[in-house]
Image 1 (cartoon, helix red, strand yellow):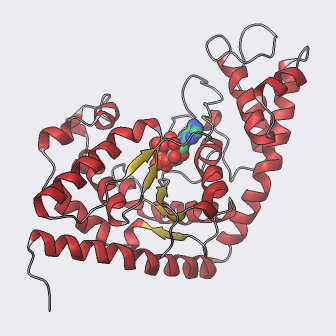
Image 2 (cartoon, rainbow, N blue to C red):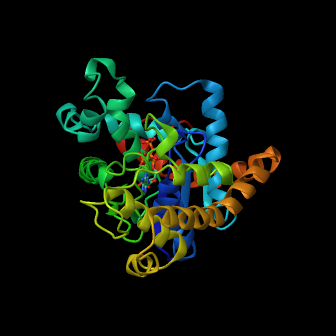
Length: 335
Ligand code: AQP
């Protein structure tokens, strides 16, 4: 046992490649903090079924996501790295938790309302509705101290805390009540074509995304085609100049310079200069990650070995928690 805080994190395999927002906002901070924590990093593939996805595509995206975790710098020996569907306890605990969740309580999750705003709830599947309960199960199985999440997931972590407290008071202390930690350092990257929306795997057009597995040429092309703002001055102003501010932010995150230093560097220069510099800096950061990911993907046996070892470590923890849950609720245990 370690005395380091235990943390659980994951990214959905909802695209062929992670994007620069996933990298700067999540993967790189995970890598930077990995030695300070006891980490469970997983790929939540069960959650991906809430959208329609071709079976072969899902398996391929799951592999690619794991390869990018490792290529980005997560050490598969020092951390527990696994696929959610390899650990059946996630779905099993989700059932028990769904039986302690109020229907009204689940109905109040704003992300479900947002995601179904267009097509209406009748068009959505029940998995999308119960997704926060599966997420609670993902978290509670591992008894983490903290769950680093974006602001949009804060309500789901609140629900997780409520369910843990309710279960503990009804059936006895089984779960640790986790804290949501909103990572401070992670950058927020915006869509290059629509710089008031975040860069997203599922945005309709790929033109606004910088994908980790893209070629250098493609990355440079996307950055050079980024929308900029009226005027010519290169200055950080999220309201008036969202396009330029996004590029300055990316440049600052990737080079380690402050935004003020970047503004100074580009004072009196044209937008084109900024784009060339951002493209060079991003390519220098991303190209080695892509190359390593492609090497890993070319060696499926090694990836399978890593995943089998992660599965074993994850199951040891998850099965112990689920066993306690099953005993606490009164299931007759198999002899
Ligand atoms: N644009 C972004 N800037 C900074 N961080 C970001 N993250 C996502 N987009 C940005 C962080 O990456 C992780 C991904 O979590 P997820 O895969 O569960 O889903 P998400 O947050 O909804 O990310 P996407 O890329 O937009 O995916 P889809 O399109 O599938 O919903 C999180 O840590 C998130 O904060």
